[in-house]
Every structure is written in C-alpha cells, then in structure tokens.
Length: 69
Image 1 (cartoon, helix red, strand yellow):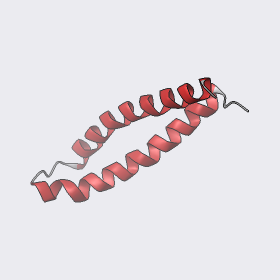
Image 2: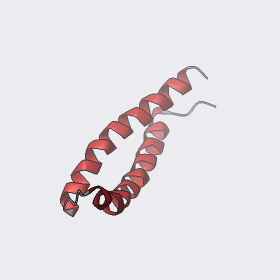
Image 3: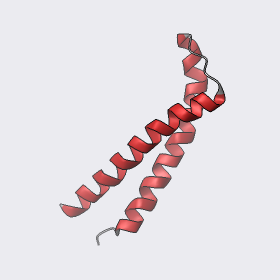
C-alpha cells in the first residue's frame, strides 16, 4: 500500500521536529567545545535553517521512494 502525500508530510514533519529538538540540545553542548557560544535564540535560528533543509529532503526522498515502489 502506498503512503499518501499527507502521511508522507506528517512523517517528515515528525521526524524533522524530533531532529530539531535534538539538534538544539546537541548545539548547546557541542558548540562551546569549539569556542562558539551563541545565545539560545541564535541556536534556534541555526537549527531552523537546518530544519527547513531537512524537512524538504525528508519529504522529497519519501515521495521518490513511494514513486518507485
């Protein structure tokens, strides 16, 4: 059974949302190791840029795999 576009989007959003939260936590821990100590708002903005890229990638790959299934 093929996954609908809506379910693909829901899966992608969920996956990326969890990834965003994990990325923010990771940045807060890892960035200071490299001498980079951005404010929380900066960490969230950096994470948001990657979130947008990741969401697009995740959705497009899911649709590609569904097309060739």
